[in-house]
Amino acid sequence: MNPRLVGLLFLCVCTALAESEYIKYKDPQQPINTRIRDLMRRMTLGEKIGQMMQLERANITPEIMRNYSIGSLLSAGGSVPRPRATPEDWVNMVNYYQNGSLSSRLGVPMLYGVDAVHGHNNVYKATIFPHNIGLGATRQVYNP
Ligand SMILES: *[C@@H]1O[C@H](CO)[C@@H](O)[C@H](O)[C@H]1NC(C)=O
Ligand SMILES: *[C@@H]1O[C@H](CO)[C@@H](O)[C@H](O)[C@H]1NC(C)=O
Image (cartoon, rainbow, N blue to C red; front, side):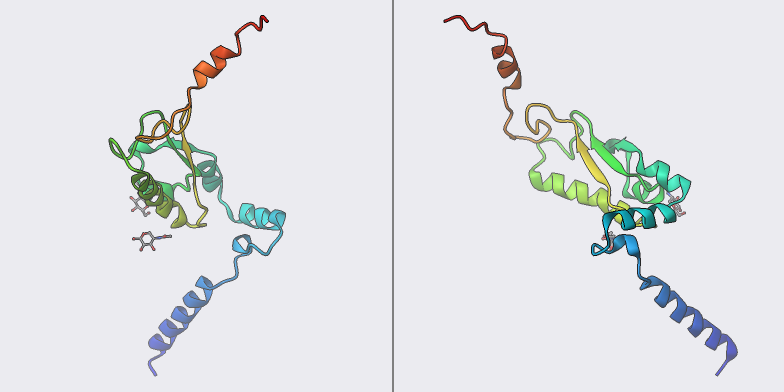
């Protein structure tokens, strides 16, 4: 056999083994502190910084989530997937960005934040709770 081909085969086998390597922080059977220590030990400074960020979704792509290991994304007030978006549109949008995070070097999933008041008020037709009326009612003097 051609020695170069043998070298190439050896390289391929090693790559396959590396991909199936046991990764402690991904093992739910491990105690949480063990998983945290293992993950922290693997993270670069850039990944730690990325994990502490929360970015507004409007100008973000899954590629940005992946490349910079961004920890959290936010829908600020009115930042919806599209006008009159359905719950399914929301799920698809979150999964779209989550794909980027899960594809990052360490595959840490992102958190998704929503700036919502009085119920999930960014979601079209969601129930809105009249919170301010309730707050106002607490100021009513009890006078039997
Ligand atoms: C993400 O990383 C890839 C590979 O290094 C690079 O080609 C691409 O331009 C980067 N994209 C962004 C938005 O950083
Ligand atoms: C992200 O999406 C691509 C294209 O649909 C898919 O091939 C890939 O497996 C997904 N990655 C993850 C981590 O879900």
